Structure formats: structure tokens, C-alpha cells
Image (tube, rainbow, N blue to C red):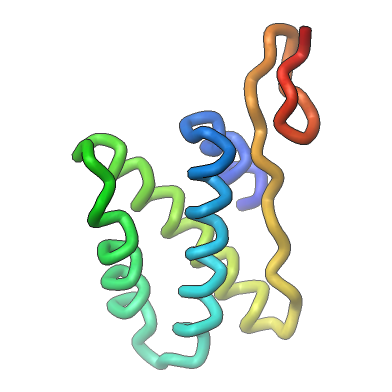
Length: 103
């Protein structure tokens, strides 16, 4: 799932990707022990992306956040720390480390 999230990060600027990931972690922790957490997760994601101006981007954000939250639920539910997935920016000759473009 990390690879999928990393590859989807190409769709977002780093600051927005970090915001999505931070909120997804908060949702994961808040909903982890809820027996029927999917409804709570969906509501929390909808509430967070509600202010996204374009419908198309709102849908992209919902999709990646569902993956991020499910990853967080799996990690947190297993007693592991929720780690960040590194944002990837497609540089000119490949993917740069740490978000810098490759010259």
C-alpha cells in the first residue's frame, strides 16, 4: 500500500500531500477501535475535503485518503507506529528524494 500511496502522491503538491497524510493519521487513530469504523472514516474524509474547490480534485483526495486511513488503521491496529509515506515528485530524470527536483 505504501507504493500505491507514493505513486499517487504525484498528483499533489508536497504541502497538500502532507496535509492529507496528517489528517489521515488523525482519522486512523480516532476510528481504530470503532467496530463500524468505515462510516466514521468516510464521514471524516468527506468533512476534511469539503473545502477542496474542484470536484475532480476532491475525488482524488478522497481516494488517496481512504488508502492512507486504511494503511493507518492496519498499522495502528497491529500496535505499530503510523509512519509517513514519502512524497514523490517526478523530476526530469526520475523521482527526486526529499521532494527536490532533479536538474
